[in-house]
Length: 315
Figure 1 (cartoon, helix red, strand yellow):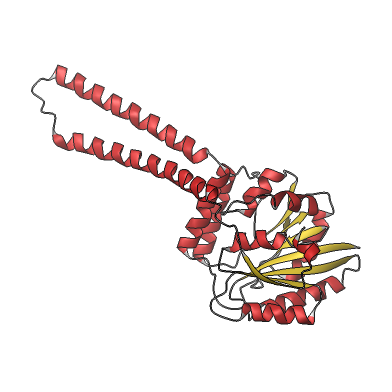
Figure 2 (figure 1 turned 90 degrees about the vertical axis):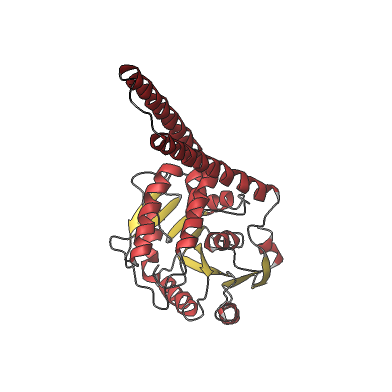
């Protein structure tokens, strides 16, 4: 019998997390060859008693592990924390809001049994807000360019990996992880399976525009392409400036009466200054992250755990 570890980052999910856990358990009762465990991580939920609900689930079910982080670290950091406490042959990533629905789990398991290291559930029709759908589209394009995601693969928050992939992923200890980026550099045996996308049952997405931008900047931890783009832009702007200056000189030689105005000069200065600041900003982003890594900024800090023995903490 194979054990499936289900990792769920929880943030203000007191109203939904019990339903998610119990519905998943009902699904596993239909699959006799599989059993499940849960690793629920409270990511510093400020608005409700999410960790209290996780504690109650831990008291009711021995296969529910709970992890309480010292503060809010972000969804991907919480997932990294959860992965450290998994014991399963496969690890399944889900959300806490019923959008990654328990009824679709069997589809991912069956796809994994075809020999993949990583399987994403993809949605033919998404039931998200306009902002979330737009950010997903940007993510789709950016991850292909910056992270090397295969063109035929669509990523999502509904994924399953093997134990071997998990063992490689938890070696990454940077303060700003992006789970999919680590997956892509670990394996290329990636599959997709269509699953139904359900509406969020309670509340709205916790991702603000600021958080989405921060998540996108995490891509830069896994790619030097922004630096290469800045180099190309610098070369193009330098060539453009040289050609513009050459044209002005030739024009002045043809017609000495032409007055070379300050307006054109200032336009060129502004364009070049903007490009220089942009390139410096990109370099500064990389340097800033290097400093934070050298200062050993924590990926996550665990305050307390539930149903986790010492041997689990050492895995």
